[in-house]
Image 1: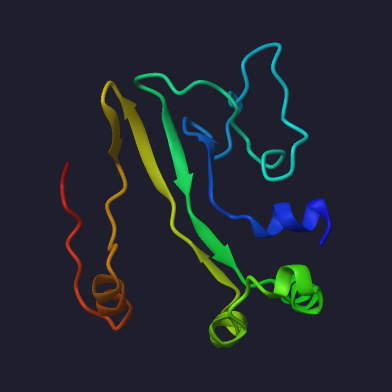
Image 2: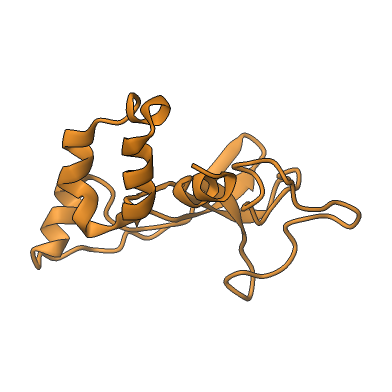
Length: 135
């Protein structure tokens, strides 16, 4: 698997500074540039998180057929894969859940209000009502 393929398959990021535009600029301070390291070169933010900054947290997983086929064929990678479980999910492509968080003095406050648990998500997908909680 090439470096670029590893980066495409790695889908957990903390990277979009949130402001007026979805992918607004501002992820790197003046004089800093994007890393060339595998797994880091796709990040769109490389700055110290300071109190008051709003940023997205984007955990996810993607089942990219050509990448999986290559990984299955490589004994050094295949030994880390549970093929039976991966194949059950392979046809739907993947999933990513994004949160907008504000950095606080003691951690973060999650600003995203949506179903989170499997039961909540399945209930909404089946047509059930969901009330948006207020802050």
